[in-house]
Image: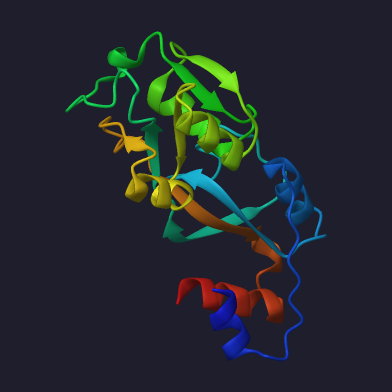
Length: 190
């Protein structure tokens, strides 16, 4: 999206800001400190993943899916299963970041609360703990692709079709006529 935007409008001054808090990003959009933010959410209405929205007129566009995988070490008890139901995960340890993390929230929707949560930190730390056999992890596919290919992690066969994450661009509807933001929206939709 940024490449398309730079090609289309090289004169625009674009700066990227990161925030570990989805709420911080959304509040910055709501107050006008940022024109737009990229977050993870489920299909459907904004905030359907289970997070609060600031009191501002927000709209969104889903430029791409953000598939995730439930993974474990190849030595894990469930690694050779051909199919897993949600009940099969009861008693397992789900390696997670913080309760505000998109993958924690996706885990709540997909797996419920019957699985013990073990906080490990960010994606890299969670992935490493899963590789060491310390539990199972729900992580973005792009973050575990190399490990799945190398065999240091295996995908657990749980149907995750009921929870789909999307990379979502969010902006204030009353600001979408701003020239720079309009160009960002065109680039995201292309």
